[in-house]
Image 1 (cartoon, rainbow, N blue to C red):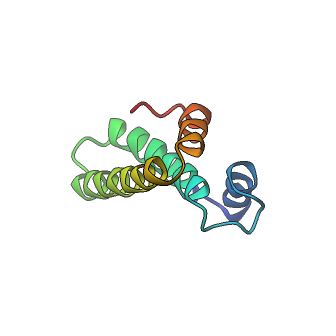
Image 2: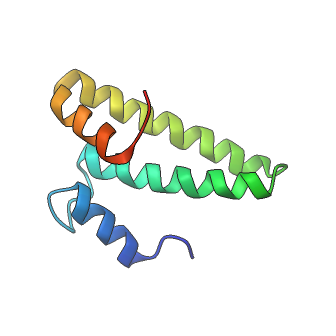
Length: 89
């Protein structure tokens, strides 16, 4: 399993306000980014896995909508999360 509960807790601690902060946009964006990176590596090896490709596109869309939400509400939080995760926009 690529995403065990310990790794999830670690992501939420680093990018959220604590290990139980699963609802903040920063923690969700960090989790989506981790999953996107994992699926991208999988697709490099398995080019014809179209179900994974579809789920990757959906995750990217969800992350984009959360990033747009942060841009509208708090531009500083947006800039910080982009810099921490190395997302290009």
